[in-house]
Amino acid sequence: MKNVFEVLEERGYIEQVTYEEELKELMAKEPVTFYIGFDATADSLTLGHFLQIMVMMHMQKAGHKPIVLLGGGTTMVGDPSGKADMRKMMTKETIAENAERFRQQFARFLDFENDKATIVNNADWLLELNYIEFLREVGRHFSVNRMLAAECYKSRLEQGLTFLEFNYMLMQSYDYLELFRRYNCKIQMGGSDQWSNILGGYELVRRIEGESVYALTFKLLTTSEGKKMGKTESGTIWLDPEKTSPYDFYQYLRNVDDKDVEKILALLTFLPMEEVKELGSLEGAAINKAKDVLAFEVTKIVHGEEEAQKAQEAAKALFSGGKTADTMPTTNILRSRLEEGLDIMTLLVETKLTASKSEGRRLLQQGGISIDDKKVEDINLPITDNMFNEDSLTIKKGKKVYHQVKIIDKKV
Image 1 (cartoon, rainbow, N blue to C red):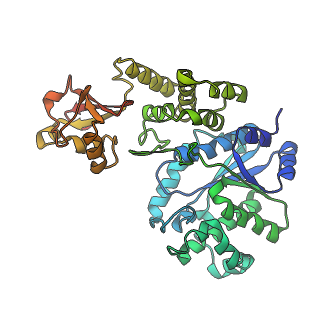
Image 2: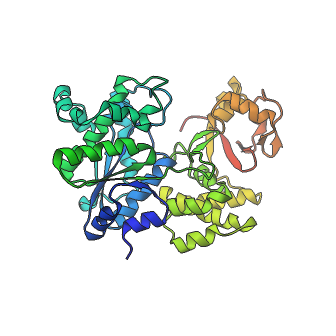
């Protein structure tokens, strides 16, 4: 049986690691407790987070213990990594609600029975810290010169880095120290953009506790062109089916670039690597088979096999011109809205087919929107009762995105 480190390496996850051979030997020898942190900046996890979740599932399957660290405390400061400006300040209540949503979502992916995984919130120790004691225990181990040279801070110096954000590295580092003391946690993992922050915690534990701990980062989910995956014209691809329907989730993956298929199959599915390579080697029209497999397998893990099956059937039926009323993403609108006046651009935003009216205007002007296979040319087109067939119509965006709109007489 392969060491899980070798599995992660073979599938293309690993970007940077401290003491690689030592860590590989530890993973082969005994169950290891590790953690990944998730700041509660939204009310759902995203496709980008899903890569990190896959790492946790691989590790748990190999007998290691994941700690999911919810950032109830660190979110109040905001991670400056990769941001041109300071993150928007959020209330305690919003952060707590978001963290609870994360907790519910993680229950779908990891086994928390019999202490096989743990989920904790750094608000439990960060919000009650004595600042002077914290500076004396933790702050004295951090060189300001080294911190300013770290990528997460260096890129912000010209635009302006607040002292609030400057504390973020210390707080994340303290998380590692707390988790080592409470759970004997020996590895912190995260995306490659977190390397500076993760090294801060790794060095802090080694200095204060004198113990061998490790740091490991994995590649971000990007396209072959280096762009982050999980972003579309309409917004983020969420793991919450209420925010991104299983059908839209499936379609996003079904439409990835041919060059990205093998990489994403390796990172976001559990298919054996032999099969991944075989599918990734397909060319021409045959690569569509690999995309069907990719979309189905990832949707199955995230939303369950039944939803994946429905999404696949809907996609195939739409491609062949069939009817898919039961499986297509649907938005209900009150009949009274039509009487009050509803235009096409407002409807595009409400169905989340576009993120804004300006985006909708561009699409309409480019001929990218159809209603029941008739191209919409009027950017001010009113949506009227007689456009609906049995209280239903289908909007098509581009060549592959479909959305059903239904009239209802009262809110359900």
